Image (cartoon, rainbow, N blue to C red; front, top):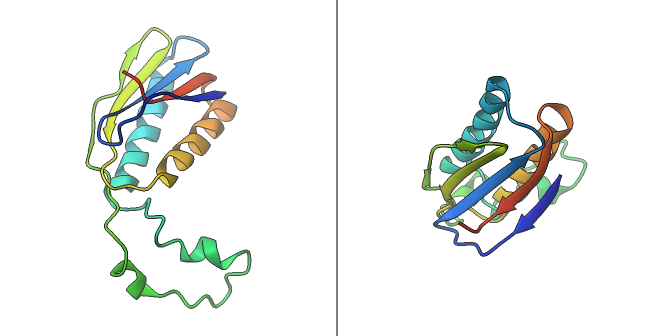
Length: 131
């Protein structure tokens, strides 16, 4: 799976997934679920890079002193909107308004799509940005 970034606008972002073959109904459903799940996590503020306490703690998180007050000390980081996933031939395309979500959201999506490519649906390329 290749990944390419074109001109991006955080509030008007197109994500295009080019598949190796025409997707079956089941494959379309899986792609839809991945994108919807990713957006829901973003809508709920899950991609807030200002509060990565567990990640920053390292490998040993036993008895981690998690500071709940950190939530109040960081800027809200939420996605705003998502369009319908549109399919044309071997291509799936979806529009997003990423709002104030941090860039880590795109790393998480690309990691998910890479695993999707390995296990379920052959993906040739993911294009972030453009029209």
